[in-house]
Length: 265
Image (cartoon, rainbow, N blue to C red; front, side, top):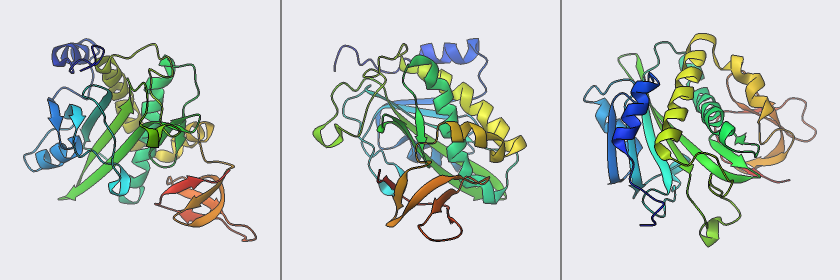
């Protein structure tokens, strides 16, 4: 292992949870290697795992993104890879998809003070710097006995120095951006703090209260994009977090709830 890539320090992280009085992360499971932290959390749900449980791994062998895409983690300790279990107290089922955008804002809130570059969010689940992926989010939900549970998986490129050839023009990292904080334990604590804040806001006021924040960092707005083969201009998102896609010569935008987006210009 590269001397800079140290195993996750559980004791240090637990001390940060206590000293910062964090709501999330009080229950922690840590692995050197696991298949997917989301898988661990989803299995733990059946055992009554608590709100705020965090599962963190130095390396994943089967990490994934949306629609089964693979999350690449080349070396143990290179990325911050974790899943947090959220059990919202109040929710509207039709707005659950917007939680991914709220989480994206939370990750941006946590990371932005450490870098000089502008961090933008690509609907629905990627954080970009200069159109290069810095972080990805995968939210998987379960509704059981009217109780909503969310496994919120986050992968953040931290120590990546040289992306593999297939990702060279598509990925970046906090190290490549000259970030002022690279310790994964501190980054995780920062992210959990802001996730709790955004979650509370989402529960109480809904995603519409975050629209202005999202518009300020929307990576797609104003660009021509293709969503699963449907081409048009992204003109923003609506109160529910759906993408608004304006097709040429059509009077009203298409409302896109889910899909894979490619930026065309």
